[in-house]
Image 1 (tube, rainbow over the protein chains, first blue to last red):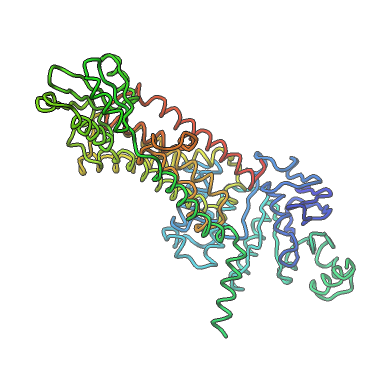
Image 2 (image 1 turned 60 degrees about the vertical axis):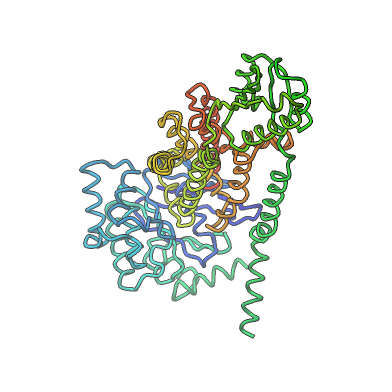
Length: 238
Length: 343
């Protein structure tokens, strides 16, 4: 068990956005968080990543209570917006993030080359990021999150606005990373992407409405698709 | 119809952004208010010291033309001149009236000379005919232009203004582009981000400060009596204060426009208290506001160095206040980042 949330609540200005969420993520799995936008997925992953703090309840990642700076060094985070410096080149961006994670010299050079290869941006590494297409920026963001070989990878809507072919490629890449033993948490509001996760948490209005593998969730509700299962669980709540 | 829809939408947007709305109305009023206070101060009454040889008749005449006249020894008067507590010292040597002017502010020097001339006109013959006036400048000279007096303040102001704006906007961009959040997802500590900004910009502002100062002194031939190294030190510290204040305030702005809104609130008022205008004619309570303004200290130190040719002793207080401001703003920056990550 790599990630554990116990009765987590989060309030923003007295408004409760996360209500009593408890879940666990096991080592080496791709764990999906499915829900409409505004459901609270980003808030949950930000708390797991240590950027936000739960108002109530506990979050443990890799055995440490979050937020914890030492643990954050072992987490890779890819935010919803491409957090890149547009004036800098792809290489300069990666160089910057690698240095922040304490990578130096030869090791840093190697890792930058590896991740650039991985996301297929080697040919464009000398280009300024503001010249990149949306898809290229997403891939570079992913590369930045992978630089320090994190044990836990948290991706907030990694494939939003990306063409189907590239989306396919990213998922294949995630599968390869997972096979090396990395635990991956990914948020999405696309139902067919949810099918690719090993286990899935369905979130609606800040509440966890169901957890399980896509097959289990479908079987439990007698639904043919994840979408039907989501509607079923959502209906039970309201 | 479509135009109307646009008009309605714009008006609605304005009312959503109450701050911009308030600033559009309140900020100009605020600046006008300050200008009113500053410019409608009473006319300056020069502080003149005289020695005991100056005829009583002249002393009375000076008093009548609105000068504050005190009698003191030459030695004491010279000390007071140096401390800028008096503007001029007048001594009588037979038929020669010798005026020693402090001289930093050309407009004050002019005022003193006018007052003395006016008073001399009231003297009775034969003294009126035989009297000669001899003027000595302690600092500056009669050739000193108003620009020489304003110059040091303007150098300080422009450095402060641009560093404030650029640092504020670039830190703001870091926030709006999501890179700040991305940084806070790394084990980077909050103070490391602040220090990183201070050093990164520090290098840039050192270059900027030296270029602006050299340009003013060597190209514009601004009056320069003291050491260039001290000028660089003070401009650098002023830039650091602007940088830390700019990044701090950017935390409270949501976009570039809101950052610019800080200019009339934070930057412009400092100009009024930086010595561009004579502070002595201001109400004392108003004058004390200047104490809270970094530019007040920066401009004072630059004037001491550039006009009065003073060294470390004269600027050490200003320098330590500027260092204090920078440190304070840095600490507040680290605390303000808590808004984005508690740890």
